[in-house]
Image (cartoon, rainbow over all chains, first blue to last red; front, side, top):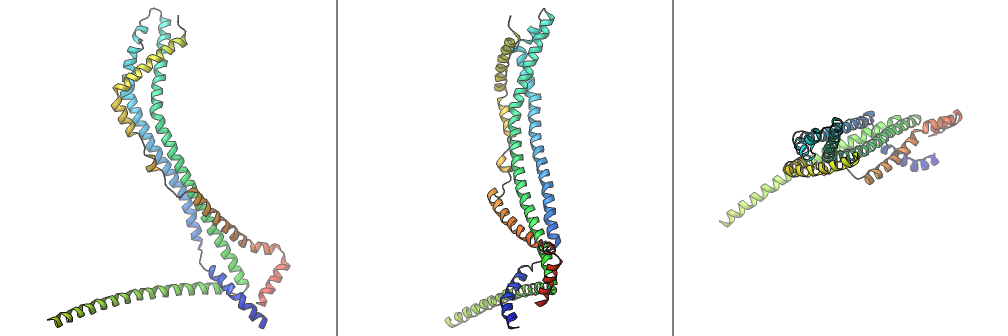
Length: 223
Length: 96
């Protein structure tokens, strides 16, 4: 008995500390919520990517419209003269005419494509850059969230093992008791803090009234 | 008689001159187009916590998770020790 008492004086505080530490409840919904957040992050990521693509598609479309309605017609008009297309087309040898016109067309198409590339490439580059930044950011947050989910899940598993261990020791209700006691203590301290705040307000009011009375009586004595 | 490649090179030079002329004629419009199609990437880039901080926190949490999982495996490990060990464990529990 004496041995038990001496042993328990060392063991009990450790056991209590262990239990109190393990008292915080980890409902299964916590793991579920964390998992759901992880799933929704994937959706947000896809939505963000779609938004970025829409933005850059708009810029590409604006550029193509400019090329089709302004740059290409003017360029063709000038190149028909500079590249002597009409003279080539009026040649006496039909085979030579075909070859010359084909060559002219080939060069014209290449030049127009070069211009398009020059205007579109910076837009494509910006899009790749932004998508890569977004992918990196979402990947980092997703990995962090999975880590938290796994940890919460492990906490639940530990809790189950602790419950089984406590049941084996016939102390199954102790943990619930401690948790409830802690909840009650926390609620009481909250109420006490609210009362203190109210009391502080009353003291302030009384102090103000006291000051007002003092100044009134001073005025009277001065008169 | 020039070869096809030489003829193409001549035409290419002429095409470049045409392009330079058109660039001058449409200079204002081209400049306006480049302005409206420029994206302020820094404004749109997600500014999240740096990778080192994330990694440090993740490593710490993962270490704690490993410890928890090890505790969670306690029951199955004890069971693996065999029925005899479980019996002894129950007897010890009964003494407390």
